[in-house]
Image 1: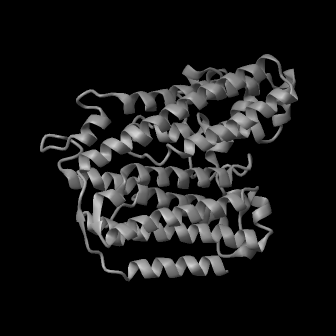
Image 2 (image 1 turned 180 degrees about the vertical axis):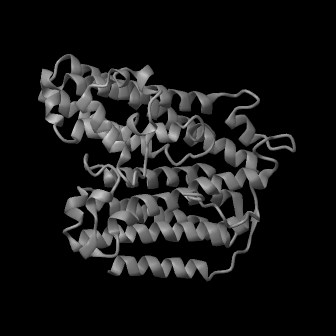
Length: 361
């Protein structure tokens, strides 16, 4: 495929270049801008969307009908998009109190979560039908995948009548729980207390439990972006691609039931791109390496255009060789950006090259 071949040429050309740059911007300024210009607005948008999703669920349950169900489904897709802007910030609040798993229990390789969700719907387990009780249960039944099954899975049409009352109560509990968790995430990022993540990340010191110096500050930033790209590739794209077009697995993609598999990946890429722009790494460097930083944005734009061109159900992508190749190209682009970060930009900031977010998985 010509577009993929071009991407590989760009990546190879970048990786064979010589990095000659100087650190020209204070790490505190970089981190401050990422928090103020990206993280805080993104978490605020996610919380607001979660509240809107909960409101839509309440409307559907009060007056079950097809229009209300379609509205709730549309809100779910919008929630997935806003979640994709935040889910790769696996630092601080999202990594605490099982918030990541409570929002998204994935990958679920043995389908244990789905079995538990089905059991709640089938049995009408009253301990799962309010947010307080649900929050004490398995993380697998609390978040977005459980909500997706309720709205799009087997017998979801029952939500348009009183026959879906139990399903609706469970949906209300899930959406309230999601609203609570996203509210906690936002509050934690806006907290300016001495032990808050924003404060610690912007003020490295020998007594800081997380960040002792500017290298550790920037390493955390590179791990968010580089590790995020790895997560997208390993957990989002590669399971679908499998070994080739003839063996593509559309149902292995995240959010395939709601046709949001491409939506979440596009949002992930957009979020990582926005983080890099907020960090203004081009302005933080001097010399030839600034062109390398600029090339990252070029590649992110390539990925965005390609994902927009194939924004359709994975079942359709799996039977169209051209769309499959484009999805493969997105994976190549993501891995190319990850390599540029690891082999060129990290050394420019005197950082080590390792930033895997899948260690121990």
